Every structure is written in structure tokens, then in C-alpha cells.
Length: 455
Image (tube, rainbow, N blue to C red; front, side, top):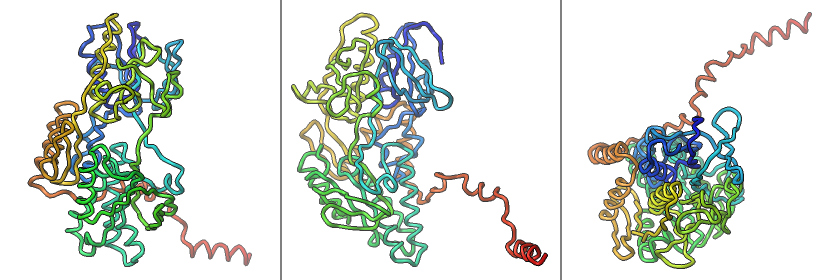
């Protein structure tokens, strides 16, 4: 950690906003003008829209993350959590990955902590649910799904087999629909190499509390997507919710009950709870309240954007807020970076205004849905191509762009790998078992006990 006396720009979070804002600031900043410090629990930024494809094996996990230290070579990158901020003293408390917490002074603050999964106190969810907010969760899901196919192939117990081949996703937004579509596509393809597992043996279920799926796509495309997924054998239940999943026994509010070894939770997100300790004004849902300039209300030296911010959407009109998506986060980060530089130099702030360009969703290989500029609708293969073109171009750094497109190109000629590396989640178990002291033979122990009794 640097002890420089230059003004410090502290960026809390290394996700979309944190990474792109830091890149922008470093690009615009004069040599020696300030020190840029980025603090994040992970040493890399994850491109979240690719998580479903990573879960299906279409994108290698290392190709959807950007290492912060390699990308931000001129910045300090600290691995840890900012647990609180004293705005009067301009000091942040940092809990590093190892060692004791310490205080870090700053002159300018960027709050880019993003969001976390929004959950409810549903019995069994904490024990059996799988999230989709990190690359680790996506890869774990992939390994888990293939492991269930292995389990079903190798058992004679029909109850175990049925539970292993039942997959439930809670949430019908982008994350939930893309996840169920991708893993169904992968499982259908994987079933070809099994002798005793067929696609007809599997059951895929989507549970959505609202009255339609993919609400961002509008009612027409949402209905079309629902029909296409149902044609693939995916059950979709709207206007319902999960009441419990104790012992992996899923109980839905509409009366359906099913045993499922795979329960994926994608039912929304919420701002990082740590924001409550930052001394900043928060909106009704816990977001940092900002001006159109991305400055936090009441502060001239603090900016916020992305999922943890309540940013007025000037393109829509008064009372509207920018939705929490990657499209807005990346563009907000550019304006935010420019405004931080302007703030340091005493120049006016620029307001953020961006018209939504549309939305895209992948539904498995060669399948997708998209709406462009609010009026052009694409379905099937054209939408899938646009989905890949758009997100491939948005991945940070040229290195990652080349690797992602290389993955996709090779997939056109090579079959998808169907192998579970579920042991990666506990790699030391085999070694611990081998290194443990050998148990004493039962017979000898019995003989010694008998000798003592006779003596």
C-alpha cells in the first residue's frame, strides 16, 4: 500500500463501475496528479452476463474475468472489504484478506460495491440453494449438474435418480431464464453420451412470482420465450413462489411439490448491505441517492453508480431511475470517471443521460431473443448472433475479447466437454484421507482387551 501524500481517489468495488471508472480516471489523469486505490474482495472483475454460458461450458471461466492488477497497472489494488467510512474524517476502514483492519484516508470516494443476491427466509434455501452472482457459482453449478447426470446413470434407486434429474430455477428474469435455458441445452447435449439417462428423464422447472418472464423484453417477446422454452420441455410457473426446500423437497405456492437436487436462486438482487456504514444518504431500497451527475446527494467529493446507486434516468423522465444492468453501469462509469477528474480540477460536472439501446438474452446454442432500440425485435438464431456479438464486444480488455471469440469459434468444430470436476470444491479431501493415521486392526484390539480382562 502506498504512503503517497498525493490526493487519493478511493474506489470501493472492482466490478463494472469500479474497473471502468478506474480505467477512465487513469487515462484522463495527469502524471502524479493523484493516487487511485481500488479495494475489492476479489482481485478480478467478472463479466456477469456470461455466467449462464460459463455454467453451460460455452465460455471458459478465466476468460470472463479481468485481473484488476494487470488491467489497472498504475493503480493500487487492495484485496479486502471496506467495512465502514467516516465521511467527516475522510477515512475508510479496510479489512484485508489477511491481517488486522486498518484505516485508509481519501480525498475523493467512488462507491461501486454493486449488488448481492436478494433472498427471503425460505426454509432450506440457505442449505441447498445455488446462487448465480459469481464465476465460482457458475462453474460450481456446471459441475453439479453434470455430477447429477453421473449419479442418475450409476444408481438403481429410482427415487435418487428422479431427484438427481430434477432442476429448479427460482426467478424468471434474465439471469433465471438464461440459466435454465443454458443448462437444459447442456444437459440435452450431455445425455447423448449416457446409456441410461435421456432428456425425457429430466425435469426442468422455472418459478416466477410476477405474471410473466423477461419483463424487460415486453409482453410479446416474454410470451414467445415462454412458449419456446415449454416446447423444449421446460415447465414455467408464473405468479407463484417457493415456500420451502427443506431436504431438497421443493414446495411451491401453487401446490406443486418435487424433490430436486438442483435449486438455483436468481430471484433478484439488492444493494450491498455494507452501504449502511458509509454515512451516505440511501433511498427506500438501500441504494445510494445520487444526482444526475452521479455525485451523492449532499457531497461534492463522493460519486456512486451501478447497481448500488439510485441514478435518475434523464432519458425516461422525472421520477425514473436507471435499471441495474451492465449497459448503464459501463456508461455511467465513463461519466463518473470524467466527473471525478473535473471535480479535482474545479470544473463543472456532466450529467449522465443514456437512452436504453435494448436488451438481449441467450437461450442456449443458436437460440436467443432481443429487442433493439425499443422497437426492433429479433428471435432465434439472429438474436443469438446479436447476443454474442454485443456481449463479446463488451468484455473488458482486448485479451479477453480474443479469448472469448476463440472459445466460440472452436466450439463450432469441437464438441462440448461433458465432465464434472465437482471435487474441485473440496480438493484436499482425498489427501486428508490418505494422510490420516491408519486405524488399528479390530482383531488385535479385541485380543488385547481380552488379555487385560483375563489378567
